Image (cartoon, rainbow, N blue to C red; front, top):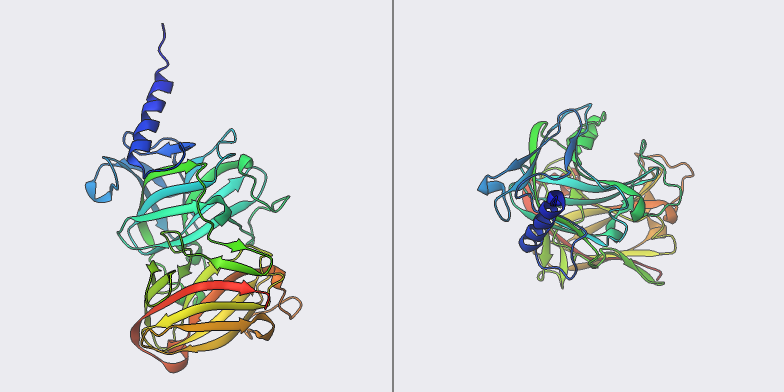
Length: 374
């Protein structure tokens, strides 16, 4: 009798992955422990290479991890790719994995539909430290940048997802022609490496980072272990729990540099703020900070206001009316008015270095981010 060796080895790999991964309420739909091989993972791009590492310094659990070598250079994009044929993600509700980067990096997980849109989740990881990443499928937002594929129905169809990709967003910043953008998003070009371990997709329901009722939209619950923001410059982002904020939040450690602002960017699902009137959050800063609160439309229009936050890590509740935001003079809007249904991201920018020429290290905490009708 011919033994089903492929099925047996696959079952053994799945059991090993489940044993290595953190406890879950459901059996994973997909599971990669990277103990013996890299599975179906592959590199996409001219300088993308996937391999298996057994170096203990780059293995989170067990004896192996996936190693992804790539380069950041102008004119090229590389990605770590997992094909998901035959509706493999149709029942998925969450993705979990661990990642380690050789530099503090903004990363994106992308879900690409067949003949449909590309949905992304952005987050930040520290340098040379294992970061746990938990993503609900509701965390993914349609990417509508120039060149992105159009989505016929404007919603994530998990049964149509044909690939999962992990991308270093720094590669996109490396393509910038504008010298001001290059200054705001400095990128270390050349070779880089990511390590991934214990990657699972399951039907387990995780708390959504964005949730809404008729009267308000909670724009970040800060419940995930990874910050769902990306920062500019030397900013190092991490999740915070407790003081100085009341509850979960995000901590940003960075340098207030003369003439250089530091920005923190959070994607917003398109249309979520269409009926909202106010934007509010709690902020605390070790040093005095001049914050610019800004929303950006899909067509590039930007609207903002300035808020002063005292130093000493004292918490300040910030509330701004969307109607009172002023147009950024350095951008153009097709109709010269804020269209709330087109808001795609929120930016909290520390302009202390730009305005006051501050030259000092600072820690900023943000939490309780929401939009309300009144």
